[in-house]
Length: 483
Image 1: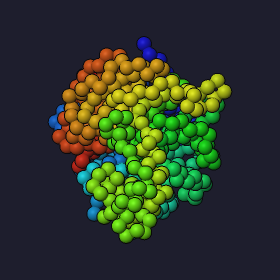
Image 2: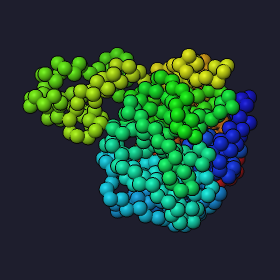
Image 3: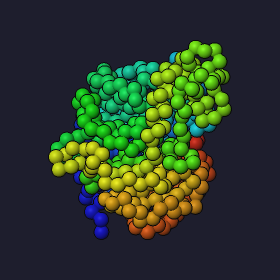
Image 4: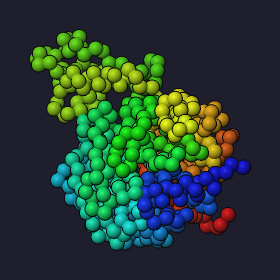
C-alpha cells in the first residue's frame, strides 16, 4: 500500500500555509490543478467512474466560451469566459450550478489567439478564500471579492504570441505571481495580492513563448517558485524573484506544468522539432542564409523573403520584437535553442545540502512525453499522456517504465491535464472522451466516458463531484448511489 493519502494531506496543508490562504477544505480546488497544482483530489474524494450527457449528471449549464478550468471554494465555483468581445469572471452555486454573478471586462483590444483552439479566457483563476484573481492576456490581472466586487485591476500589455496567454496565476504568501513568457518581453511578475501593486519583476529574455503554470515546492526548509521555460526549469525566491537554481531539459516551448511528490520535482515537455532524428529542426547559419535570401539587402529578413519551410512557418516565433523582420540576434537565439533542445521528462532531487541542479537529476525519459497535458504524480507513480491517447507510467525514483504508451482507446489530442483520485487517473481528450484508468503498476481502463463535445479545460474532482468544462457547458457529475 502506498503512503499517498497521508503525503497528499501533508502537502496540501503545507502549500496552503505557504501561500497564506485560509486552509482549503478537502472539497476545495483553489487554483489550476487544485491544491499545490498537483492535480490530486483529496484522499476521501469520490468522483464518479461512469458519466456522460445522460448518466450521473448532477447538473449541466450553458457556459460562455473559454479554456480555463473552474476553481472551487466552499459552495462557490468560479470561472472565466469570453463572449461578445467581453472578458468575463463568473460565479456559480456548487450544489445547483445556478449562476450567482458575472462581471465584465471590456479590453481596448483582444489578444491574438489560435483560430480554432485558442480563447482569450484560457488562464485558470486562483483564490485565497478572500479574493478571486483572474489573468487575461488582453487586459492583465483583476481581483474580485467572493461576491463579485472588483477590488483592483493591474493592466498589462497584450501577450506577444499568436496562441494567446494561458499560464495561470499562483499565490505565494502575499504575492500573486504571473508568468508571461512570449516571443518578446518574457518576464515573471509578482503583485501585492491586496492592492495589485508590482512587488518585483524579473525579465527573461532567453525564454521564448511558453504556457506552463508555476508551482510552489517546499524542500529543505525553503519554498521555491518553480517556473517552467525554454530549455530550463527555474527555482525563484518568491519574496524577490531572484533565481536560486535552474535545471536543463525542457522543450523550446513548454506548455506543461511541473509537479512534486515524495521529495522529488518532475517535469515533462514536448514541442515539434525537439526529438532527435529525422524530425529534429535545425536552422542554417545566418550569414549565408541572409546573403541568399535578403533581396533588399537591408541586413534582415521579411516574411516574403523567406523560402517555404520550417523557418517561414515560425516567423512570428522568431520575430520577437514584432517589427516585421527577423534580425541576426533573433535568428541566432532561436538557432541556439533548436541546437540544444531535446524533448523529455525528468525527475530531480535536492542534494544533501538542499541544492538543486542538473547533478541531482535522477533520470531522463524520452518516450510518451506530453505536449500540453501536464503530468501527474499519483500514489507513488508518475504518469504522462501523449497526444493520440497514449498513457505512460514510470517509477518516480528510477524512471523505469511500468508501462509505456498504452493506448487509451480515445484518439485525438490531449490538452486537459491529468488528474487523479484515489485509485484512479482521469485522462481527457480534446474530442471530449474522459478515460478513467486504474492507478497502479499495470495498465487497465476502468471506463470511457464520451461527453459529446470538445474539452480543453482540466477536469476538477472535488468531493463526490467531477466538474468538466466543455465547449459550451459546465457540467457536474455525481454517482447516483454512493460507492
